[in-house]
Every structure is written in C-alpha cells, then in structure tokens.
Amino acid sequence: MKTVLITGASGEIGAAVAREFFRAGYAAALAGSAHFENAERLAGELAAHGGVVCAIRADLSTAAGAEALWDEAVRQLGHIDVLVNGAGVSWVGFYDEMTAAEWDKTLAVNLSAAAHLSRFAAKHMLRRRSGAIVNVSSVWGVSGASLEVAYSAAKAGMIGLTKALALELAPNGVTVNAVAPGFIDTKMNAHLSEEDRAALLADIPMHRAGTVEEVAAAVRFLAESDYITGETLVVSGGWR
Image 1 (cartoon, rainbow, N blue to C red):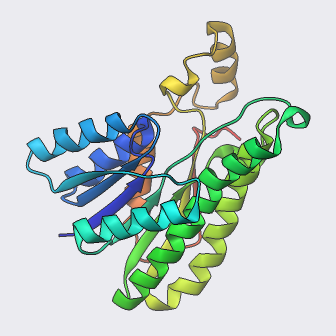
Image 2: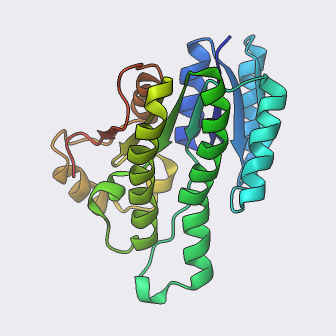
Image 3: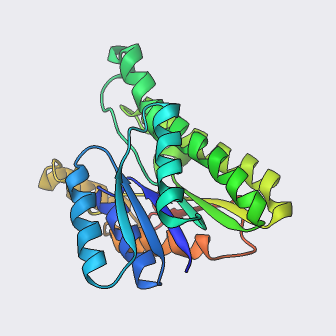
C-alpha cells in the first residue's frame, strides 16, 4: 500500500488533499498543529471507512519538531511514498510593522519546515529509489503580495527549494514539484466583504474562486507523475 504524509491536514486544503489520496487507496499520516482536533476528526472519519490513517500533532516551528513528526510518521506507516508540505501560517500587515519574531515564525512554518521534512524525505526516498515531494506554495510566491511580504517570501523560497531539490533527486527516481493555489474558497477568505470579493473575482479570468478539491487533485496529479519534476503548477483560474 502506498503512503502519504500530509502537513497542514487540519486546514481545509490539507483535509481535501487527505481525502483525495484516501480515495486513491493510500495510507495516510495527517499532521496538524493549530486546530489539531480537525485532523483527529478527519482521521477518525477516514478510518471508519476502512482507511489506514493516523493523526499526528506536530510543532513545525522548529527543526526538532519536524524531525519528530517524520520519525513518528515512518514509525506508524512503515515508509513514506509521498510527502505533501501543506502547513502554513500567514501574517497580514505593513512590512515595517512586522516584528522579528513574526518574521521568524512565518518563515519557519512556511519554508523551513518544508525544507527540513524534505531533507528527511530525501534520505528515505533515495534509499528506496522512488518517491514524491509536493510543496503547497501560493500564487503570492510567484507574483508577490502587498501586506504579505513574509508569506510571499516564504512561498517563493518554497518554489526555489522545489526547483533545486528536484535536480538533485531526479537521477534516483524521486520527483519534487509545487502547487501554487490562487484565490481558493476557504474560511480563511471569509473576512472579505462582498464588495472586495466581487472585485477580486472580477480580476480572475474564470470569474470564480478555486475549490480545495481542485487544489487536491493537482497535488495528487504531481505526486503520481513519474516524469514531471521541478515544476510549479499554478491553480488560479488564470489569475496572476
């Protein structure tokens, strides 16, 4: 049975990714920190339908936390075929008002955690001469966003990590790719006024928000594509 470790599984996109891989027959380790109860609830739901699934509480703000997560996931699943780096936090505000601690946390969870877990995955997958890493970046990592400088920098760094690591691992049959979602219909965007939402949708060529299921399908597509590596698939309805 193929296996997948998904970080950020307590969020809406992470949960959709978990369901996508579950439907494809994967055993899954669902990692979460904030709102960990969501990951536990999802694990219970999938297990009730006959899935092999576990929920793991993870502190991805430190390298030690990332290593502890990896070790526990391998202990429970035996091996990892696919790593999905989906954990993320955002800080919105003027960059000159951001503190050093807020910068460090944003970079730690969004970028450093993915880098640490990818390092552990690389060692594991190179021995097996197979595997896939999919990083969930953002359209802001491609184009940047005012008031989200640290988040944009971290997500851009994730794309750089993807490109470089893909070159190292490709000769041994391991792929590394990224998905860059645009405006996705999640609770995180519920704070937008109707006017702001309408204006944003007017800028999207397809005139609608994306769905978490569309992002999840892109993640699995890249994870199962043996000859695509080092790429960033923007899931944005044409929006940049």
